[in-house]
Image (tube, rainbow, N blue to C red; front, side):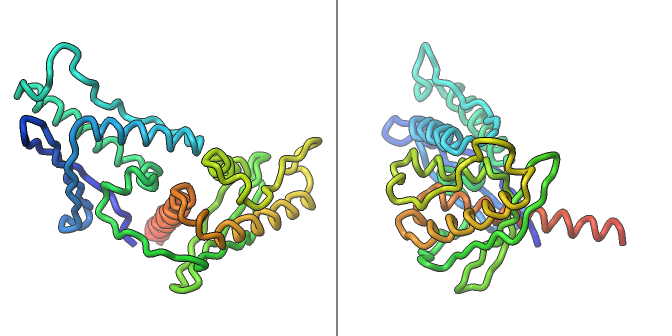
Length: 250
């Protein structure tokens, strides 16, 4: 299994007295796998702002590289030296950005990647939460995703709080009345101290996920698409690590 990593090369083109940046993203493991996007600086700035909104919405603990600032005293498109400087700054920004694995699953970023657009998969994905482990007083739930058409399966391990971030993001986007009940926090005591409570939450979370995956409007939402992409990337990364360990110990 080869994990995808990307490199970015940026060129500049001037059309109708306006600077456009040609963003070429290449899969480093397969250099023929590329995608080219043309954007003006203002569009890239909007992209960065949308990315920040996504990260805040999902409560992701990620540190973004600094986005190149506007020129304060003169127009960049009137100065070739400044155009080149901005081009280099943007190239550095994108390469740093695309080196963050979790970033690659966010919808604004995926529009720049040479990946196939997922086909509408209504009623195809089911989730079973097969087990849990308690690690340093934190409960980690092991979720098995399965595409019932392709039979593809992958494992995703998450804490309750990380799962709740997905629910809260959907609520913030206006889906509150369309979502199934989300397992609530225990008011007294710790859930991780009571195996029966953990088991009940495991069952409730499984019901919750299968309910949202069976609702096409919710399934199509960018938050759920992030969850699917991120869970697959998590599984691929961990599988690769396991393969490396076996090689090292053999």
